[in-house]
Structure formats: structure tokens, C-alpha cells
Length: 144
Image (tube, rainbow, N blue to C red; front, side):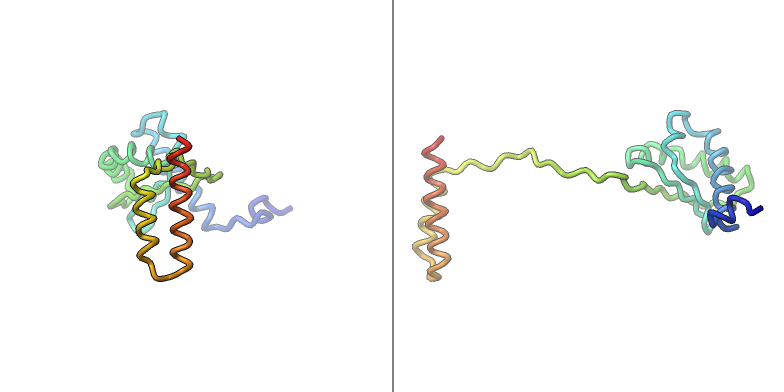
């Protein structure tokens, strides 16, 4: 009977990376506050650099303060780490940006400036568009 790993296709490298991740997370759990541990998603040691992936930029900022202590404990565990890089996992569901800003109010002065600009423009299509804009601005000012 084949093992689950061979059926799923998890290679030796992936298993080693997961094993290393568990070991590093055990070491990190000795240092980090317990409320921070669920926010650490993955750890990987690559070319003497520990790459830590967290779920938000806020946690990356908070945990960055314990970097020196983390390096000291990892060296006691005989792991060759010279630096730590922090990474933020992308959000699973992108949120749409909501603009809360309202449009600037039009004034009769700005409408007059647009009208004046329309008179000095040589291009007929642009002049017509500016005149329409000026009339709309005057209508907005009067409506208020």
C-alpha cells in the first residue's frame, strides 16, 4: 500500500521543509508571546536567513522587536542564522477600496474661470466641453 505522501505528491524536500518549520516554530514559541504564535504562518531557513511569514503587517512590526533575542536562541539551538526577514502573506479575500471623500464643492468663481478658459481656447471641441462644464458648475452652485 502506498503512503499518503506518495499519493499526494509531497516530496522529500517538502517534508524536510515542514519538519524544519515545526522545529523553528517550537524554538520561536519559547520566545514569542503566546498571542503572537497563531499569527506566524510559516518559517523557513534559507542561506542563513530565517524567513518568517505572518498573517498581517501589524504582527510583522510587533515581532520585529524580538529579532535579536530570536537570533540568540536559534544560535543556542545550533541553527546557523545571521538575519531574519519578515514577510506578510497576501489576504485571501481582497477587499475593495471604499472612497469616503466627497467631491469638492463648485463655486461661482471657479465656474467663471472655466468659462473664461473656454473663451480663450482655439479648439472648438474643447471650448464646447469647457462651456458645458461651466454651465454645470453654475447649476451646482445655484442648487445649493
